[in-house]
Image (cartoon, rainbow, N blue to C red; front, side, top):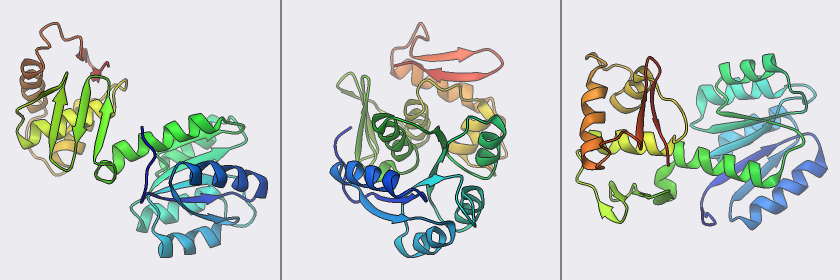
Length: 226
């Protein structure tokens, strides 16, 4: 993905050397940054700065990362990537339960963190980047247009949103319930088999007769393989 501009990141860690390292690298990538070394400052700064993404350390004195995550998810439209020095399943589960969008264990490579940031942007703020290229797909969210193998697909609004969701989450198994929630909305009162109808239509438009692009995993859902 190309360098980005206009996307705000809040870095929260009580270790100054980590903040400095991340700040230098992410500024070079074009992000607009603010930093905080404790939880209370992070919460206050988030309200003022309104970041798109928060890189949040778990272990901090006073208000820890879990509490910061809980508070931010209540009031802010923000993606949170949590950092931890421990590979503890319980910590990851707790963070994800509180609304964290991703989790990384220290030490980590800058390249991996950058990839995870871009994944969050593609999933939660695609309108900020305009176009995303993934495999043979190009998604232009401003024009509400998807190209596949250089060909513009003729899609209804729902087909567009469904294919965009599948492609942006390529490699992940997506259940019908999750697809319904994200594409049709949590208050959709219809039958979840409508997903099958739209998947069938997308396969026809993608010439995916062998179901190699949009795969069906019996009892689990669907997965796009690029």
